[in-house]
Length: 205
Image (cartoon, rainbow, N blue to C red; front, side, top):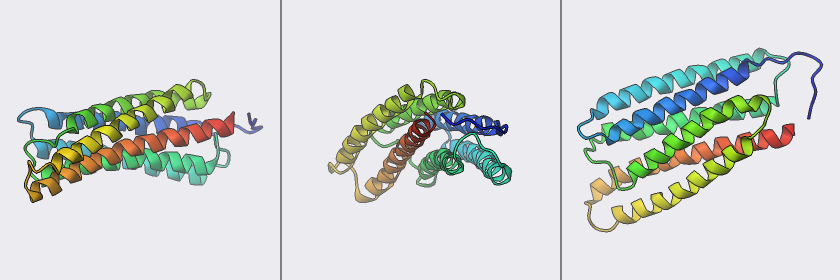
């Protein structure tokens, strides 16, 4: 464990918490796409608003990083974690946008399960960020996120198999595949965040 003789800027912990809470908001909004008769344009617009707020937190994190002498852990890791959290929100925003722009009335097979996993991963991530202060209990977080991502891989493969079963025309397959792949990318990004947190914890232990 490293000891600093100078006080560190603890605001980074709060910023990571804000970013993670935005991911929770984004995942909950995505779940709105599953409601019958939901306005997909409105859902996409609200997810986009959350994505903008997440961007603002990321920019604030980078600005603070560039002006802070002593940081709670390695500067490179702060940058990577901030970017990783932002990437998750970007992926979720893209998924909602595809549903809206393609005018998809019925979400692709497996999308409900994918969105459910995203919500669970978002909750786990938000709960983990405060624990960066003492690095305790984080192993349960990255193990569970990895498990969720593995479940997501299976759902993703089954979804593709269904899409290419011949039940859909070629154009519909292309559109629905984009949604499925973007949801899978979001879950992958959650795992990348968990991996970054694991690397930080190992360094700081």
